[in-house]
Length: 404
Image: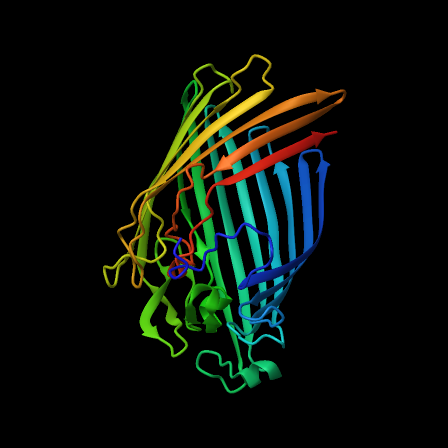
């Protein structure tokens, strides 16, 4: 590759190279499921700490630094009213605290705290060859941004509208629901349909960001007046303003508009011998997104894609499995504001795995090759397209597994 046109590297050593991210994760999780006859209860609690640093020019200097503490909980109770009818009621929520590191040279988002709670109900009903599933959920989210700590004041970070107390708080709430059914119309054939509506609240960056994001070559600006999204009624997207800062970063602003997303996913699988000795499968998806106010395309809409996979256990002992798969991404020539057309590409994967009995245990060895043709490509959904950083080339993975 031409080093003057890309930040990608052809080096094969494993030494750290600027720029890079350094991430530390710590998690403690508790899960419990209890059976009470027709009742089933479940409880999940977790604490997660994420320490993230982005180092760009000097190895011992932090350009972007964030520390997150996340508490998550989920409790539910399920009741089998009859053998064919099952109901589930639950509550789920989280508290997230996010802080900028004092030694960070750049600040993209303010310090913030999220509080989110959701109540949900699901019901499953089996009527002969027909299976019906319905769900309803209510969510409430509070997001508070705080730019009043000394190192944010010294940096000059301001929230949208520049409030005098350097703090902003927003509340969002909404319903999510779905109703789906499947009906067996013959041996190996099932007809499915699903209708749903989804609620989504803006995240911290979409509301309160106001700073450089060098990893994407952007200066990002949020909008604290954003409303909630309800699927197929509104779409939140990211667009270039066409302006450049003195430091060369392109200014991208979050915007909100009435929009429509539509498309379809198609999949099929065939087992000619009635078991997993040979399986042929194919899938495709098509998505379109339009801004109803400007008649322009929405940004970050993936290209049309076609996937196939051939796999199975061709030998009599069933100890060896093989697979061959491919993915074709078509030319994405429907760019949104500030986007460029993305060329088509094709990826080929292959692999083999064999199991070896060892007394009461089983040892499994396998090898897989991803992007076997070593295609050079940049995906339309990549946030690094402006740097022309390509995705990985040929990648060989060896897998060793011992079951005991």
